[in-house]
Length: 496
Image: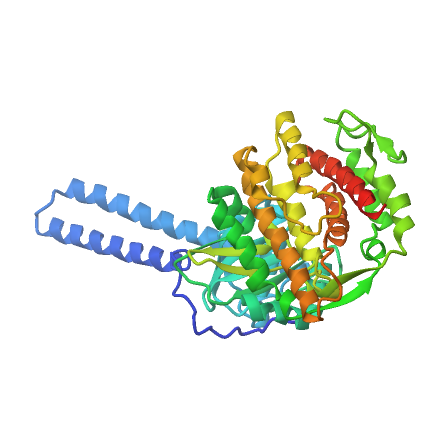
């Protein structure tokens, strides 16, 4: 989807920001300085001020004006040089092409050195071409070093959210427009325009419009909000709001019978990626990945090897058939893809590169649980890791129980950080169970309420994937490996 050369102003467009008024401010200061110089010379002419004082004040003011103009000239020269470089590299249209190129403020928010910033600036200039200027207000917490999600203010539009990612992801998002519109019906996060590249490993960008975005309220992603707030009930309410009001699972779902061990099979490439990731963790690099049982850190007895279990045990149960729910799924629902505006709160989902239809809806619950446990939960020392294992044991429900959520009373003796995660997980699992039960009720209650096994299988896959994420710490990855082992053991108990 090519961006328009002349972007129309939105009805809710904001007035110029302080950064957007930077040039006007400089001109105003210069005019004011000239005015004062004139007054001083008039007073000197009338004999009210000694001539030596006049010369001193006049020199200072004129020097200040000259310095301001020099800084403006240097800034414009750097911007022109950058545009020329982008044009030579074929990334950005030349200023001589007749397409207005926006002046970009706040480039420090992009992070990284000049070589890393340059392609991002080029993308932003292309995404907002036809506009006079834009300001990068903030970068949302999380994301890869050379990618990210940013809040942008422009001279011709209301605030926008921009995602910079691999061109292949941007292309996938463009192809999922019809499915994205289903999400937009609920959360108002609308795909506006995108810029991609034929090189899949190059960077691309996409612009989102957030409906009902209030100008005076603060916007952050769920990760930032989660780390800053101590209101456990409010966090749990946000999770319930996400699954009850924002995600379109309730409108687009159907019950079907499938083989869960085939539906959630672990691809061999993921096993290879996990093995490679373990080599970078000193405490885990010597593990025998082909062994069925492992002596893992912080355990007293051998534990199931989740990689062995994924490759050689899951296939034994491929013939097992179970009822599940499928529909439109986001596919990569984590704390960085959920934006929040307080007070309210308003919620928006972004990043639809993995959005698809006719997929198990449990994926959107299991992905977010893995993010809560293996990224947001702060596991630092050995004591935290031991506490995390005890926490995971409480979350694994007894055999043959159909309800997913663990009672909050079982988490009262844990530290505050675990209680906060536990409240969010309890809300998430209640919503997953309720989603399954309501889907079953819609077809006359013929499928039953066994939601534990398919959920655990979906969670097992995302737990393994957590071992490959750069943003997860060594302790968090160790916790994920141990949790995957515990999940494998519990799933084996459920099917045998």
